[in-house]
Image 1 (tube, one colour):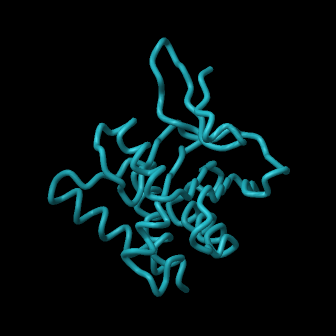
Image 2 (cartoon, helix red, strand yellow):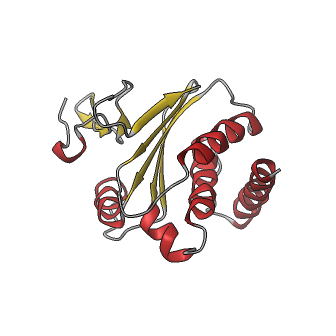
Amino acid sequence: MPVDPALASGGLRRQVVSGRRSPPTFGRRMTRSTGHLRSEGGVELRNAQRRFKLDVRRIKRAVQALLKGVGRSEAQVSVLFVDDQKMRQLHRQWMGEDAPTDVLSFPMEERVLGDVVISVETAARRAPKNVTRETVRYLIHGLLHLIGHDHVGRTDRRRMSRESRRLMKLIQT
């Protein structure tokens, strides 16, 4: 299985399935030496960027509440926080677009929903006074993609936007 050396320390990895590369996924094991991967209750968080401080406890609680809010509290999800440089690389590799983006989602299966990759640098640029809140907004967006929402058409955009607002209210209470 080819592994990206930049991410080999317990984080995102590429898998070869039937001769094709699948989207990146987290290794499903804890890495105590780095202290960056936290796993509990079906939620894995890894902060691969160092520039911005994140309230990891708040984000973890938010992920758990969001999973419950979408009726998937038993599901597993992984969240990777990166900078714009790494996001640009992943965006180019998996989506064919040579620019950073705010969030990428990689759906998997029923029990393991998939992975969400969030650019904290983009969140900080768009909401410098509350990076964690903006990061949670991206998390909601990514989670909705994992469970099948999209925003291609007008109706889909409205439905996804409505569900995003509902979930944001759910975790703010």
